[in-house]
Length: 124
Image (cartoon, rainbow, N blue to C red; front, top):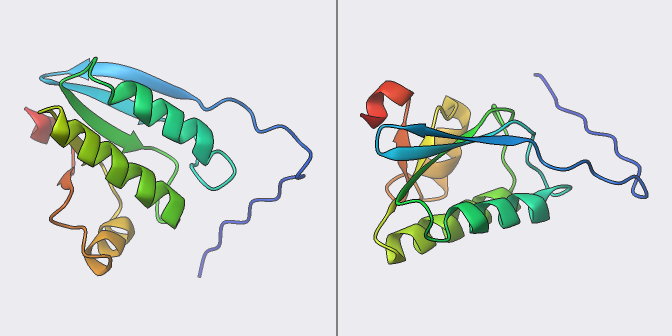
C-alpha cells in the first residue's frame, strides 16, 4: 500500500496555489498543479469561486496532483462549484480523474452529480 505523507510546519506559510486556465473547445480547463488538501483548501475555494463566478460558461477541472486521494473539504468545494455553475446555466465537469477517486464519488452518491471526462478529446 502506498501512502502520501505530507509534513508541514504549522507556522510555515503555504505557497500560493499553482494553476493554469486553458481554453479548449467550449470549455475553460482549470489545471490545478498542486495537491489540494486541508492545508490549501482556502486558496482552492477562492480559485474555484473566481473561475465559476460567471466569467466562463463551462469549466472543466483537472486536479493533476490529487491522483488517488481527496479529502472531504475538497469534495465540498467541488459540490459548491457544481451548484454555482448549474445555477448560472453553465457546466462544471471533472477531467482525468483516477479510478480511485471515481469510486469515492460513487460511494458518496455523487457519481451522477458530476460529469466526468477521461480525456480532453471527450470534451469536444
